Amino acid sequence: MSTESGKLRIDGPRWGKIWLTAQVLAARAEGKGSVSLRPNEFLTPAAQDYAAARGLLIDHLQPGQEPPHAVAPAQVAAEPRPLAAATGVLGVVLARPDALAEGALASLARSGVQMKDCRIQSCWMASTIELGRAIAAGELAGGVLLDRHASAGMALAGKVKGLRAVQGVSPAAVVAGLRQFDANFLVVGWSGLSVFQLTGMIEAFAAGRAKPQAATPLLERIKKLET
Image 1: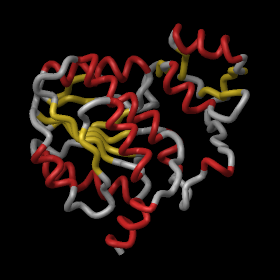
Image 2 (image 1 turned 90 degrees about the horizontal axis):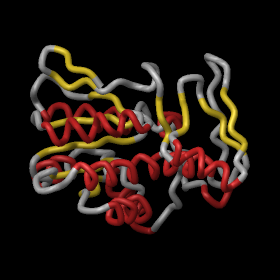
Image 3 (image 1 turned 60 degrees about the horizontal axis):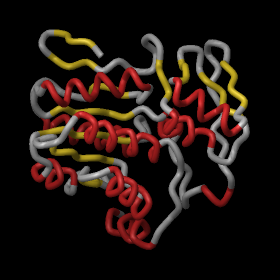
């Protein structure tokens, strides 16, 4: 992560080393005995311990190659997840400058969560709408909106076609949103949260968006309402 003209910039997967946490590795390895890493991806010590304990075979791909992301048939949702979801890149909108939120994003980038800054100038509302379009088009695996409070973000996200927003109150709530309606947008009000709480929710969301979710009656009803 770097700063350019006073704006937060979150480096994408092509810049520097990407450190994969044990949680991210577990999501990639589910149902498989091996995991292929891109040339700039490396395992954190905890991820190395996870791989060793489960006998996972880890190898590095050559530049230009993309790792396979096969999943067992029972894990596949009603519709295939776009390729962007397999790469795990999340679009991020920081509604207003904040040291705690910026520190959390920097920590996540170092640990291997792949993010792209999707702010348009200083308008978080326009940024959220454009981010929603990118997610619906399959250009990003999902999106995260960080603001002091979550209410305004949740209200706007509910009006953007294709966005299925979950409010970040805890990692368990995030996982429930992924499981119940394949949430593709996380809204977190960071006021009163610690960096640990904030990063925990985003890590859970990133791990969930990296793999398909099973179809549910609620998800099917949402899709019918949007057609």
